[in-house]
Length: 97
Image (cartoon, rainbow, N blue to C red; front, top):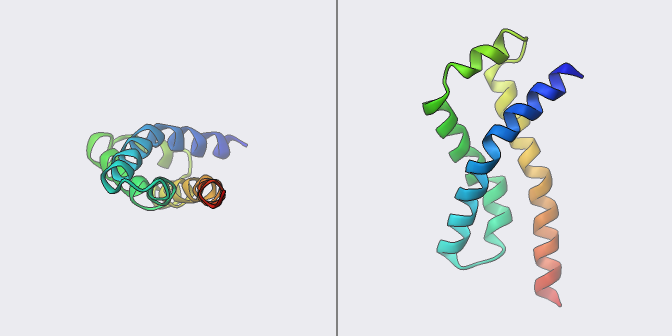
């Protein structure tokens, strides 16, 4: 349970950057469907890149608790894919009606 909380805290720390980047990419393309796609693909990579540059030492905190950087990144991407799939479904349903 402790590891889940740590994964969730790391994920929350990347959400704002992910959503801002995803909204910016969606506005550039003027396509509503691009927001959930960017939330699953480009946004997580931009937020992880930003985290790598600005908070590199934060990874030691997680490593000392038995969580590797790769595990943090994989779980973060998975946690972005799940809502992205739901958002894609909602956008497609709204466009169909």
